[in-house]
Length: 124
Image (cartoon, rainbow, N blue to C red):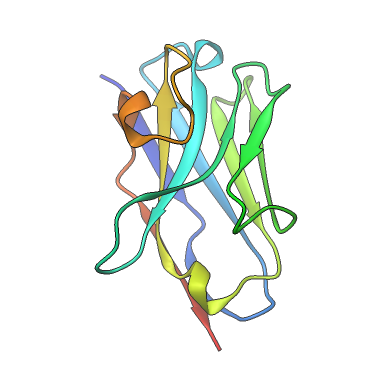
């Protein structure tokens, strides 16, 4: 049974930082590309960042490029999202996702497994 468990969310002031973690189990982690998505109230789930199986390639949405960093530790079956210079518009539930087949990394349909999400709230 595949499980993705996010942690590290919380309330932070604008300009602050948070580090999200996503611990994976029940799959061969190194065979999966990983992604982070977010969903704000009343909005569609949107792509944030993704990382290839080895970690050698990373991709970011324009809205977070230069502020967020995705990384992974295949020995720990964990993917991270370091979020710096947070803005109120970053407020959302953040989800990690796993993709076995290296689909179009910025689309939700490319990912087979999803975590339950962790809330990030940025106050102004």
